[in-house]
Length: 233
Image 1 (tube, rainbow, N blue to C red):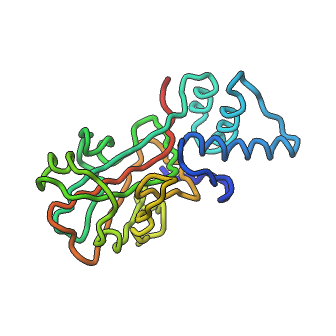
Image 2: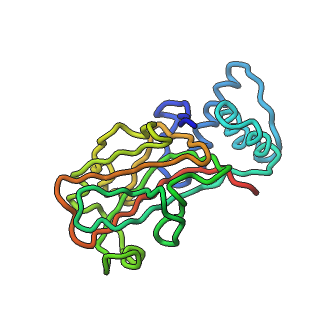
Image 3: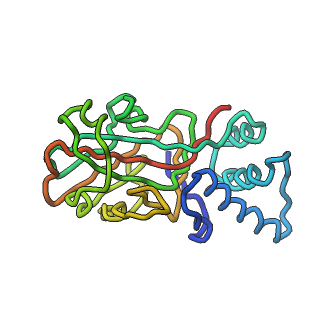
């Protein structure tokens, strides 16, 4: 399986993330409008035709035919989604944020075995990375952590984010400082992808953080992958 990028340029994704689905729909609506201006036909399918047809016109090129048919028939829907991973980083210089061997566990991760769910396409539009100090150096402590701005050891480090083995979402060794922002118009620790990625179902993900100096004792880190998934109604 391979990663497929959503085609488009930066102006197609110039809306601050208040609704992940809204971003996808606005970008794809622009694409549909360009096609209309070129004289290419489109099919309206009811009150929600503008946004739904815009999305369908784009994903038709990259997802399974059955998914397209299910969306058109309203058997499936586009749903705002956050995948999350909270891990202990207790005085270490390397942190594997996505485990390929652990099941889902409330407050720790909502992804099993480090893979996207079977049958669910996922459009990744942004990420959040935060850290905090756990009460105790175990899962219970991590689950009870108040996450905030990245600790300086983490903010000064870098990360590698790959899917399906070798496909990089961002260039290798990207600085963690991209998440170290404090703005009132977006969530703390948020980074918006200028080039959103469609990720196929059952695709393995790999996200490793490296720091030059060991993290503090009982450090906990939380990663959230933000986007839109294709779900059954």
